[in-house]
Image 1: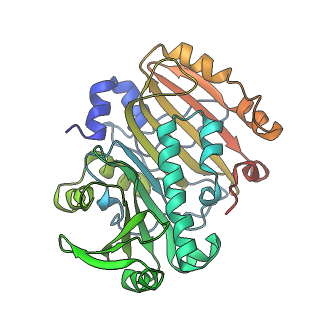
Image 2 (image 1 turned 60 degrees about the vertical axis):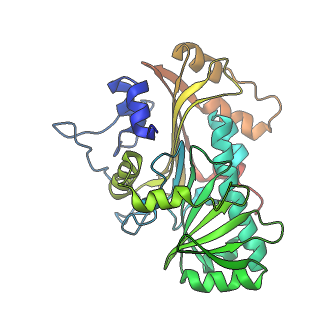
Length: 338
């Protein structure tokens, strides 16, 4: 099986790989596209903090959550947690605004589905989940899976959360040395207790136990994408979320499939958010960039159309880049109803 970053290395020339998978990229200046920041010798350079942001990282911890990434995943979303404005973004709105492929919406939507389902089971509003969850999350698409696996960091011992889920009707059992809770109602994920404050949610439609991607993450060496994310988490104190996808995958706006995607959301000017998308189309990058620039937003709200018009798509080598900086007043147009 080809791991995600190795796939990217085979698919994309070195210059494009640096754009798509390079860690520690600094915030772009002015209207210039994002460039990877490196030290002599090509090693990633730590990111300078925004002048309006304290130097305290938004992501905390030692990478334990990231260690549960399936080495063969074809898609990985990481959210840093804490006071993270993207936690309330609607998946469809983000995908529409930044021209992301449907596979991105699947990962974002399924992550939202787990959180909404948990809120229902626990009898709280979405905001009430902060009593149980830190907000730090990984969502991944194992190569042979039917759906998205979601791994969450809890604020309380997972045994306490398991007790609440059992009271809500989930059935406890043990599989492959792991404690598992099976769904019995409309919640369509089984819960897997991984560590004292780490819990996974596996689609109940998976063949067999569905634990293979988690045991692979537990037993195999770290994947390159995991290593990249651990470094980025440590270096980029403004990072809110990162999404990596490998294809080929369809794109509703483009005739040619997309080979790879990286989508980043970072803090910008303290209360705003900057979004950067980098995609490698398997066709002509210049044509893809023009098509994305000329997207039809006639079915969207006036506010969304204005935001779509502000996303600047350019072709750089084999990669199409899109970027938008949004002040706080723009963020409400991406909010979901939780």
